[in-house]
Image (cartoon, rainbow, N blue to C red; front, side, top):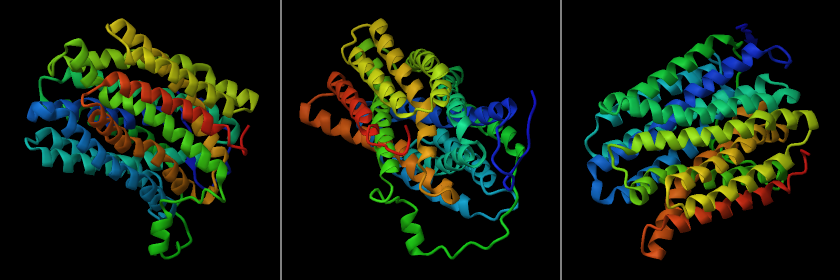
Length: 416
C-alpha cells in the first residue's frame, strides 16, 4: 500500500488512498481503545463489584467521567493548535493521549473499589479525548473540502467497526480482567502509532500569544450568534449522539434484564449486537460520503440519516426476542452510518476559524462527549419518574432525540 508523508507547511491537496487508509487505521485503533471500556468492560467490572445497584453506580461513573471528556476535547484541541513541539502539534497529543489512556484503563482492570474505577475512567476519558481532538483535526488540516465526505465516510466506518471489534476483543479475554482492559487499549495504541510517522509536521516558528484566563474560557465556546451554522450543526450532532448513546450505554442492561443474559454471557451478546450495528453502519456509510461529495449536498443526508435512526428505536423499545432487537439495532446503524459519513464533512465546511480548527472541532466534539453524561442522567431521571427501569420508554425517547436532530440541521445555511 502506498503511503504519503505530510507536511504542515504544504498546501492542502488531494490525498492518496494510502493516506486515507492509514488515517482510517488510526481512527480504528483509537475508537477500539475507547469503546471497549466505555461500552463493555467498565460495566462488567461494576456489576462484579456492586451487583445490587450496578445500573445506578455505572450511570454515575459514566456521567462524571463524561464531564472530563467534555473538558478534555476542546482543551487539548486548542493546546494542539498552539503547540510548538518538535514532535508535532497534532502527533504529540494523539500519541501521548493513547499512552496515558492505556495506563488509566490498566488501573481500572486492577481495581477492586468503585472510587478507583471512577478515578481511572475519568483520567482515561481525559487522555483519550486529547487523542480524539488532535486526530480529528487532521481531517481539517490535511484533507481538501472536495474529499472530506469520502474521508469522513471511511474514517466513520472504522470508528463504528471498532464497536464490534471492542466487544469481541473484550470477549476473547473475558477470562482475565486485566487483559480484558489492556488488550483493546494496547491494540489501539499500536494502530495509532503506525500512523504517527506519516504526519511529518514542521514546528511553528512564531511564539503563540499568552494563554490567559479569557483564552482558557473561550476554549469551550463558539459564539452561536456570530456562527449560527456551526451552532446548529452542533445541536444536530448532540441530539443524534444522545440517541445512540442511550442505546449503547444501556444495551448490556437491556440484554440482561429482558433476555436473561448474565455477567458472564453478556459480552458475546453485546459483540453480536455490535456486529449487527456495524453491518447497518457499513451499508449507510458505503455511499453516503461519496454521494454527498458528488452532489455537493450535506444537509439532506444528515436529515435522512437521523430519520432512519429514529425508525429503528421503536423496534428496540418493544422487542421481545433477539430477532426484533437486532432489526432495530441494524436500522439505527444504517442511520448512524449515513449520518457520520456526512456530518463531519458538513461541520468542517462551516468551521468559524480555520487557524483554530483543533479548538473549534474540540468544541464540536463536546456534542459527542456531553451525551455520555446526559444519557445516564436522563435515564436515571426517567426511571425515577416511572418508578422502574423502563427500557421501552427510554428507547422511545431516543427516537424523539433523533428526530429533533433532523430538524436542527435544517437551519444550517452555510452548507447545502
